[in-house]
Length: 274
Image 1: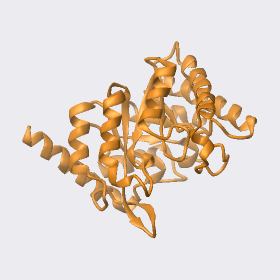
Image 2: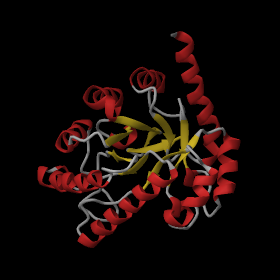
Image 3: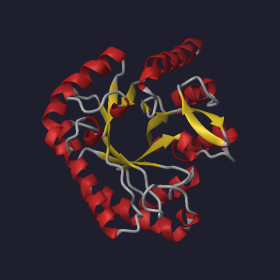
């Protein structure tokens, strides 16, 4: 199973060559790339260098944007940028371009009750439909990530999106931590299992995070140092989606090496017990 990391959690203001060296030193198989956060350049300005350094190592290009921003220009710009990333992904052999769905709040993308309404959901359907249609003649696919504060706030809402679009070109990023809040986090394993039950064949990426509860809020920590039940989560992934990519997101640089060892130990433990 291939394990990657979000590039700007490793280095920023760097070059593709320097990033490649660091990724290999850490022992990751590949990465999730948001070019402007790593190289301070747009993706189309760095695509040749990225292709040369990371052949078959770009698991996901991030082109995250707010699909329901109150400013229509923001949505148009987001769609345009996502399509540009689809073009580049196709040329550098990156399989997926990903985004979350956003919030009616605008910026930041925090929770407002209206995010969970059906009318808001329909706005996301129309945007995703346009993005998926753009991939018709490309090898690359669209990957959507849910989050409780956003429009696609639960596995069931993600399932509704998949049913509404009904395209083999639409895939899913499961970030379990994103689906959690202070009221439901103790049920995180059940939420994870629900995603498998509803759309396991669509899941291509798992974002790996861990957390503790601090001052009534969820706070990210190194993998294996929090409440996420990885002893059960990793076997579920390996049993249901062994070809999906595992990507560390938001794991601090100083925690990445030990977090990688932790996940690899769990994988080896599962494989040894089969």
